Image 1: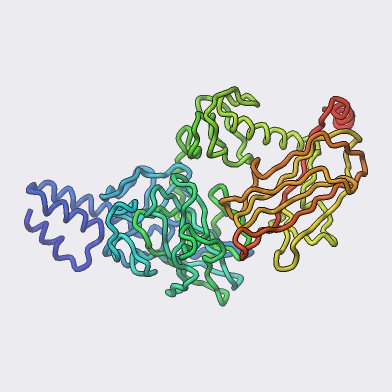
Image 2: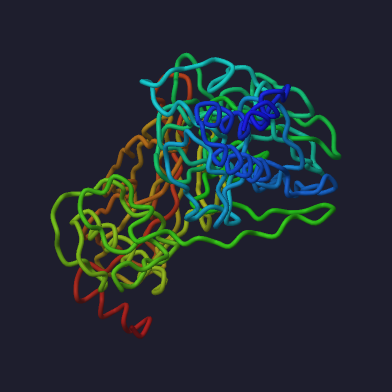
Length: 491
């Protein structure tokens, strides 16, 4: 027993797994505990070693690169904390670690976690240089090789899972350097789920400001990307490097990984979310999760996106045969059913289909019209109605933004039929029922001029929204219009 303790104690820079075991062994009088703990330490240490060979080089194509977190080729500075690969059937078993594994929906079937995790909330002791560091590159440094075809500024997005207030920060660097623009990546929203984020914690905004996390790649070729610990317990799934300043937050695992040379490790077995997973902060039973069934009920279509996360407490039948749930969920389902039906019947005018000439709009991500606030404060655009004469409920689908509440107007033949001020979003931008407004029972004839106008706004007087919008959808408002559409479409 004593010889085992001595062999561990004499390590000049023991691995965190060995240090955790040493603490347990030192306070135990049983030799068997020591031997079993040594074996556990060795197994845990294996999970901190690279599974990607040093010759694996990922690739940026068309301004985007994506890499699985577990595909690092090197990890350094592991004396106090280290990153461990969490995968099906394999966990390091280090203590303390106050939360369960979160493999459900992890990209590639695995993720990394910094362990041990001794501080998960403000009440637990902060030990600088051990469970927290504001110095990038000081503790638990991961390295990845990426070949860039296009030099320039790359915004860094990371998919992470946070359960507390003190497990939500890391640093990012490039080629052995740690620029100010890579310090203090921060997560606050959507606890207990995998979430993409690209925000920097600042004195003014502790939950992070967008557009401030980036790396400047000055030349094409192979570069090393680094991530290091800020807070222990951080869970890291995947990262994206993109030149798109207005990159839209993915609601899934994000872009595919591209390999320039070498062979990337095979994916681990995927773990499906348990029943009800992905429904955070829901007050009432809310039916099946998106893309998966619960209680034998059919799943929601994946293109509907995430269910409302805050719902009413009532319980009622849901439309579309989705069982029972809240009124909030019922409205969300009906909103998506109506949009799907409008698309099937050709009753949608996508924003990207409008002619941009003279409008002050530009096309963003090939799907939204938007205003560049450095050039214009307002914009308007027109098109002729292609629909049969009748009465319609017209829905404007806007895009919620976190830097201002844009205002929108819809007109027919210069007569305003309604106005909408989009609510402020917690996301950089997002679509959904909350950001749509329906104007009911509008008389509309074939060839009438339909106009959408919008104006930007600012929540802080510094950053401005872009008054983005996605589409107009149309639903017949009376039997006569439904009959005309049935003649045209046969349904």
